[in-house]
Length: 98
Length: 240
Image (cartoon, rainbow over all chains, first blue to last red; front, side, top):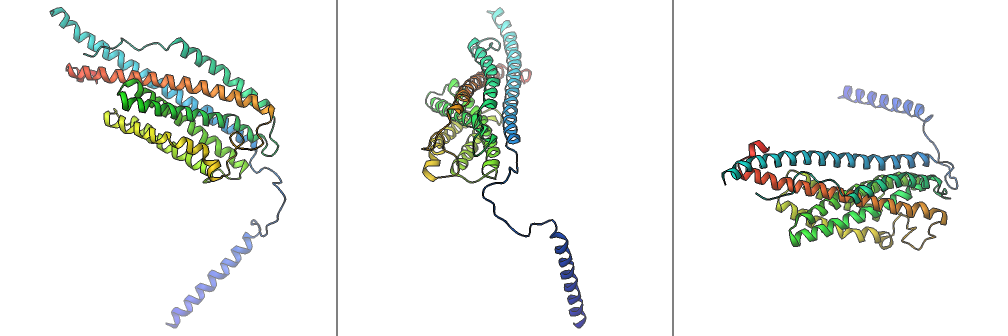
C-alpha cells in the first residue's frame, strides 16, 4: 500500500512539474493580456480577397450549373433520337401490312 | 403509341438572344462593381452587396415559379407545370446557394464571423434545405406521380418561407443589414447604377436558366413517354 502511495505521489509530482515547464514555454506564443482599442486597427482578412472569392464562387456555381444542364440536355436528346428511331423502325412493318 | 414531335427541338430565338444578352451584360456589371464607390465603414467587401442582393431576388423568383408550377401541376396534372416547378426549384436553389456562399464571405469581414444564427440567415438556410429536398426527391431515378405530388407540396411549403425570410429582419431584429427594406440611410446615389444593373442581369439570368431547365425537363418527359411506348411494344431490351 505504501509503495502504491509513493509511486502515485511520484507520478503526480512528475506530471505537475512537466505541466509547469510546458506552461512556461507556451506563454511566449500566447497572449497574456487583453488590451482594448477603439474600433478595428486593421482588417485581419482583406476585403478585396473576400470580394474576389465571392465573385469567383458565383462564376464557378453558374459554370457548374451550365455544364450540368448541357450534359443533361445532350444525353436526353441522344436518347430521344435513339428511341424515336427505334419506334419508327418498329412501326414501319405494321404500316406495310396495312 | 403516344405521338410526339420528332427529335430534340432547337432553342427558340428569344431564348438564345436573352442568353447572349446576359453573357454580354455580366462583364458590364462587373465593370460597374469595380467602379462603384467604396463604403465608408465596411470597405471594399461591401461590393459583394451588388451580386448578393440580386441573387437573393433571383432566388425569390425561382422559388415563386416553383410554387406556381407546383400549384398548376396539382390542379391540372400537366407536364409543363411540373417542368416549371422543377426548373424554378433548381434555379432558385442555385441562387440560394450563391446567397449562402457570398453572404458569409461578406459577414467574415463585416461581423468577424462567417455564420451567425441571425433570423434571416437561419430562415434562408431552412428554405435552401426544403428546396434541396425537392431537387433530391426529383433527381432520384424516374419520378412517379407520388414523388411529383410530394415535391409539389414541398415547393408550396417552401414558398411560404419567402415572406418570413423577407420580414424576419424587421420582425425579430437581427444583425443582417436592412439598407433597402428598412428605414436606414439607404444607398449613396453612386451605388445605385451597379445595384440596379445587377437586378437586370440576375433577372435575365434567372429567366434564361429557368427557361432552359424547363425545356430540358420537357424533353425528359417526352423521353419517359417514349420509353413507356417502347416498353409496351416489347422494345424495352433494345430501348434500355
